[in-house]
Image 1: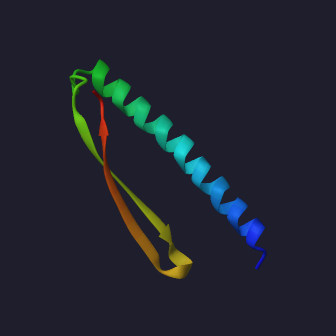
Image 2: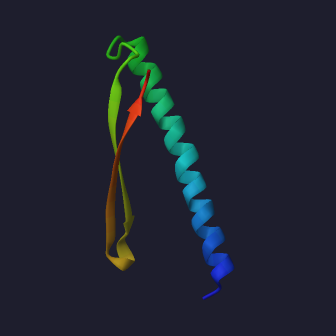
Length: 68
C-alpha cells in the first residue's frame, strides 16, 4: 500500500462529500425557508453514515446544524 496515495484519496473523497453535502443542506434549508416549513431559528438534527461495504464498516455520525 502506498500511504501517500491512500491519504490523498481519503482527503479527496472527504472533500467531495463535504462540498456536496453542504450544497444539499443549503438548498434544502433555503427551500424549506421559502416554503414556510422553517422559521430560521431552528436547530436541525443531522446524521451521516459512512459505509465501506467491502470492509463491513458502517459508522453513523450525528450532530446538529443551527440556523441561528
